[in-house]
Image 1 (cartoon, rainbow, N blue to C red):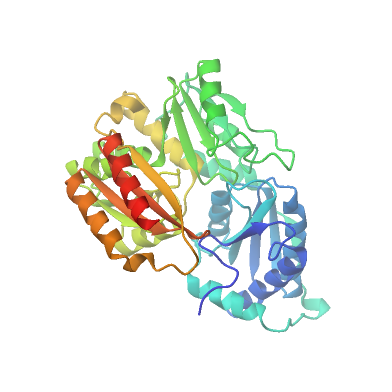
Image 2: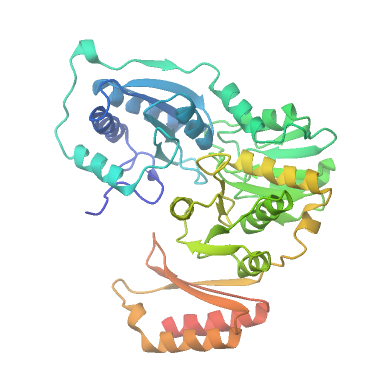
Amino acid sequence: MSRIYFGTDGIRGTVGQSPITPDFMLRLGHAVGRVLKAGDAKPTVLIGKDTRISGYMIESSLEAGFASAGVDVLLTGPLPTPGVAYLTRALRLNLGVVISASHNPFADNGIKFFSASGEKLPDAWELQVEAMLEQAPEWVPSAKLGKARKLEDARGRYIEFCKSTFGNHLSLKGVKIVVDAAHGAAYQVAPSVFHELGAEVVPIGCSPDGTNINDGFGATAPAALVGAVKAHGAQYGVALDGDADRLQLVDASGRLYNGDELLYLMVADRQAQGVKVPGAVGTLMTNMAVELALKKRGVELVRAKVGDRYVLEELAARGWELGGEGSGHLLALDKHTTGDGIVSALLVLQAVIRSGKSMAQLLEEVTLFPQTLINVRLASGTDWKSNPRLASEQAAAQRELAGQGRVLIRPSGTEPLVRVMVEARDAAMAQHCAQRIADTLR
């Protein structure tokens, strides 16, 4: 059975268009509440959100839906996605709900769910919810309706959790850090965490107005961070996305470090502390230079499908702790159950402080391979996978790359496109091979 509403990361879309409408959100809250009550007579859920203006409408609709099913609700107000995951687990609640469309523009919004253990829920649970959505509602009697209340100091509790992941013997005193919260969920939390650990904080992207989330600031628009680091003479810049589960880092020179490089740095730091790291999980898009550098360290890199959900699944299956994506979703499962931009930044800064080296020095063994990505639009229904000329051209490109590059051809999940990606030590070769394969597809 395929899912109708749930995608790879919850339910997401444009506000005012199905399913991101108040009537659907009421139905969704009711359906999820009924699924929860199958396992607990009086469940309680936690609802957090980012700073989009539509969050108020969706929050109240979900709250009504849960109450109508007899489920109690705790409201956090604006809080990063990983903060909701943490508090759900820490407070022994039944479910965590996040109202956010992550790095999307403000006109979009969405819903993500976390289990009682603070983990993303499996496909089977989502199918249960979708099946319940097809059933007629069963409103509970007045005496059994759920109640809603604000969770006091949700922000403070999460701040303390983030600080606890940073070494007790370490401090950020004397370090100036630009913190860019993308006018999103971490606009109050992130500056406080770094300040309370001793850093001099320069906040940018911390003035949300309901419509400016991710607009020219944050992890998906790092130019603002680079400029601010240089302008303020800061040693580091930290950029988060709208719900703060994604990270980009900048050093004093303005050099931007992506998630692939930061994953390598986290592995290297563990090894420097004498911790055995059997492997790490990346995605199909993880740069080959990182794979080869980890191999030199005796660390296997396993590639999952694109999406932090799939990285998490692979880590769980192998019993490993470290994984991530180039986009800045980083996972350290000994610290948190989900990707956390603030915690990831602290782990990287901790590595730098402990080593006494700069980020550039720590990454001397990693020179990212140039990547060429070409999107090829095809007619609907085109069977490109069975194209013998494409297979031949791909094989020829792999021979030319001779183990010092790779070819990835994959369909877009949202558009009628096939994405051709070639990476190689030599940028011209990557461009040449990608163009030949794209021409063959066309």
